[in-house]
Amino acid sequence: MRIIAAILALAASAGIGAAASAGLNARKKLMQALCSDARAICDRMELTSGRLCDMLSKLPNESTGALWQGFADSLGRHEPAAELWKKCVNEQRSDLLRRLKDEDIASLKALGEAFAAAGRQAQLNRMKLAINELEARHMEAGEDAKRKGKLYSSLGVLMGFAAAIMIV
Image (cartoon, rainbow, N blue to C red; front, side):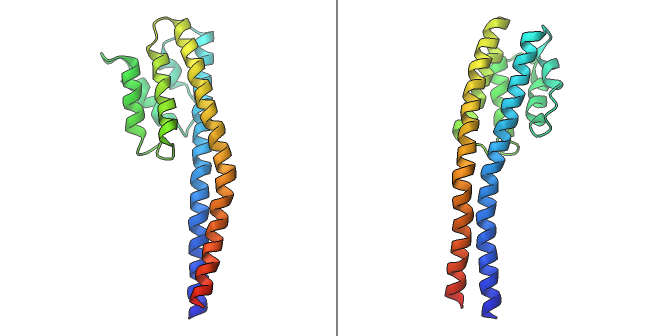
């Protein structure tokens, strides 16, 4: 009976470590998708003179589609685009964006300033600055996933072994 309890403790601890590591990888993947979407919007803004809401609706990324679609749907209201963007980010914070750190959210909200700029060239300039910031956050997420992911997985297994030894 003790051996079964020890095996269960080991499995549970290893699972907790793996889940923490998976959370870091999910943050990295989400930041990568957001950067890709922002670059696609910027490219479309440079190449076409279409409306922003039309550009947003054509984004192919399934993992972040709810954020962009929510923003595209809210455009046209009598509120500044930057405020609408911040509201959309806040609405998705507990769902789609739950894996992001506060600093990631702040960088994402800064993208809204690009949407609010007067003139296409000013929008493009601000968009490129925001993309650079998002890419820096993505690089940090990748480093965290690599460094802390191994740590969390290893700690989970080690804690499981410690618990198993204490049980037996």
